[in-house]
Image (tube, rainbow, N blue to C red; front, side, top):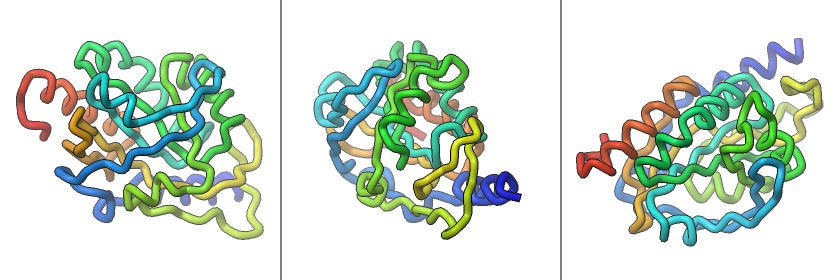
Length: 197
């Protein structure tokens, strides 16, 4: 029953259209937070990352959950293509940093290639005007590792932010792997001097 509840909750987060999310042309809110890559913690600063090129900022409901596992794996498999297009990627969720230490190092998901950042209080997601689904009160929902999830869920939405700090495109309301491939298409278009969409 708990697994069905989790699937339903995360399915809502996946299928919700990013209508409330910040639109293209908007200045992306900057943030500075704890992140992890290959199990090693560091401070992620969006402003510094943008100095090197476009950044794909992707929000996802939670580490070690079905769709998010697929999305992280797909990003990890395509990181070289994002880099070739001059873009970097950062995943953001409401998970605690210790959970992200494991997720970032897991060979089946982030595989030590994809950095993920903690937005434990949801302030970063809120600044991007994302819908946050509350964890049902009194319910114990396990993740794919069997650990109990203890945080709310940001809707699955990706923002492609250009060096000037503006959102070039927003990707939401699609399956996790499609989210990655659409984001890759956009950064490749930008690298080629074409329109984002």
